[in-house]
Length: 188
Image (cartoon, rainbow, N blue to C red; front, side):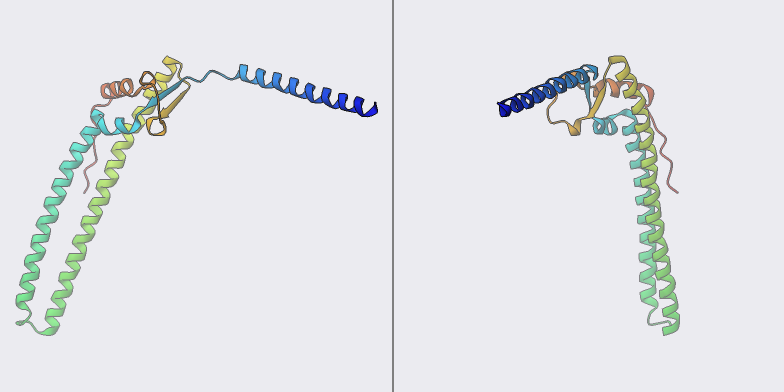
């Protein structure tokens, strides 16, 4: 009998814990806001917006100019190298070694200049794209406030989603209205 009453008390305690616990969970779930999810193809915006296209156009022009400069410098260095090879038999070994050292120094300086210009161009691209990225975020925030959206997820993180929750087009349209061009700093 005593065992039966202990079992009854234990069962009652478990039932009480489960009942109170489920009510607590139910109350917590009522207090949580309803999630309204939207999907944004951020990569597409950074690739296809008017500002991004303008950046690519400017960068391509800088690359063409940089390539032309490097090719002209390479041609000059090749001509100097050919002249140095012709002078090998005419000059004394010391004079030839001195000229060869000067030539190598010019080649290394040209390589450093080219690498520096490439780094400057890469930095200019980052700076320009940062302006686009900084313009997108307020647009997304405003759209979320207007539409009651609580979560915006990048499309690359979504396996399946209804097209109705994709906000890429309205964000792209607003971005194209507010930011058509971005000045890409010219690499020196």
